[in-house]
Amino acid sequence: MRALSRVYVSHLAGRSVFDADGEPVGRIRDIVVSMGAGDSAPRVLGLVLEMHGRRRVFLPIGRVTSIENQQVVSSGLVNMRHFQQRPGETLVLAELLDRRVTLNATGEAATVRDVALEPERAGKEMAVTKLFVQKAAKGGLRRRGETLTVDWDAVQGLEVSGVQGAAELVAALDKLHAADLAQVMHELSPKRRGEVAAALDDDRLADVMEELPEDDQVEILGELESERAADVLEAMDPDDAADLLGELSTDEAERLLALMEPQDANPVRRLLSYREDTAGGLMNSDPIILLPNATVAEALALVRDEERTPANASLVFVTRAPTETPTGRYLGAVHIQRLLREPPMALVSAAVDVELEPLAPDAPLNEVTAYMATYNLVAAPVVDADDRLLGAVTVDDVLDHLLPDDWRMRPGGHPHDELPPEAREVVELLEEQDGAGGTTARRNRAGTEAGER
Image 1 (cartoon, one colour):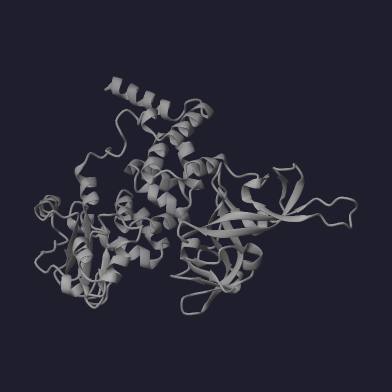
Image 2 (cartoon, helix red, strand yellow):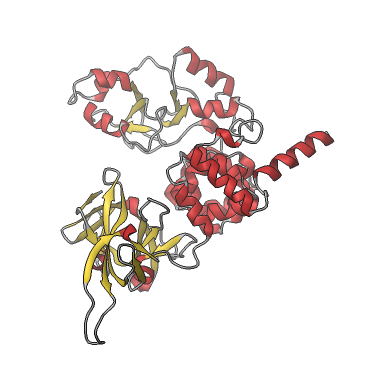
């Protein structure tokens, strides 16, 4: 995201948002943040836009490509579902402005008059960094109190009352890898697990869901409102979303697919048409795909995308237009090592490996495994009878189906000493609050069941 070094929300309020073609999308009516805990600054989740007809919708901050020169530009389509504030979310204009706080340095009362946002993590996210506050007036009602700008953590009382305790837990675990947070959630009681899921934003919950056992995924999805369940499915990788929907009844899966945006639902529908133990059922429908006239520099730029897994970024596939799956005619693949040896302005078509035969979508799991082992691959193309690229199978998807169903959850209920320190402390605290209703109860239940068997 291209952004000013600092932007105040008062300058964003009422401002128009434009798409990449310069067409107006809507006007900003509020900014949604997730309040941090400890030394974590409140993180911007997105914007509330007012569309034609006064309908208010949510625009994730990840869709905002530029905030500069008094203009806000977005990419992609806007989800037209009506915005609903969720647990753990705070509206800056509605809830933080005019909030009474206490200055840590002096103990004086003050009022928040404005909030500053700044980009972080190489400009891909934004956070609340500064507050413009006004001290309480002294010496009569007509006098105005002193104004000053302070760091966001230089005051007390910024938290909005009524935010669930789960939001604080989420903030405390914000830096955990998704797999570690999934481990913590697996150990929680169903009630706590539901609270944490409600407090996570869609993208984070999607990442965590992909690391949870299927039983936990189905339980969490069933606790979410239908529209939010659809949002989370949209944020998941299509193959993971298809695996999860495959655990539901046909009617329930179809109901959620109907709530998803078509561009997100269609790849999932295609994946559901294949058996889960075939190349078609295992594949990811969103590999890196380029036209033959693309350059090596363009390919490497896509490979560097931190959102892609190492396996998914190991191969670049070259096809005729269109480059959305199912693509035009498949031409071949280029390994990242080959790209690194080529000049940046060389064409990817000159480096294509045409000898690597692709997999058919109905290839069974054992054939897929033997294929990847034979050619020492961590990703493999899947092509239909019409030479269209359908997707790519990655080694992590193969391992998911080769390992036992419960491989993600370590034996013995994931003992506390195996958790990262911050996660261990949180789980132990929750057990005390719940009367050992989480991990210990789960272990006791497992032990009882084992004894009965």
